[in-house]
Length: 121
Image (cartoon, rainbow, N blue to C red):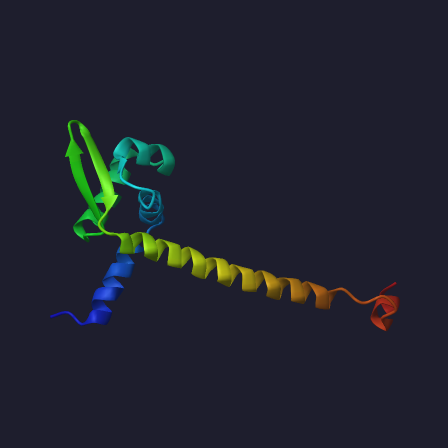
């Protein structure tokens, strides 16, 4: 039996490709045919097929055939929740980094009447 932490690491490795993340975000809105994914992801069909196969093998997405069309969908709502959680986490992280950057910039700007400002002139 594989330890849980190892299974989690494998799961996150599966998510570790920008195309796979983009596909999962798109499928968060509902099932989509491959042709729609191709338009929005803007990669070769063979490359998209490979990335979808990785997600399918991992059980993260499902594929159903409707005539000539293959529809992909998230395997469950938890995947969409995970994508939203990642977006929320990154939004907070970037916001705090922006605040730090602003604070650093404010420190670099000498205040009016500052002797350092006068010495530089």
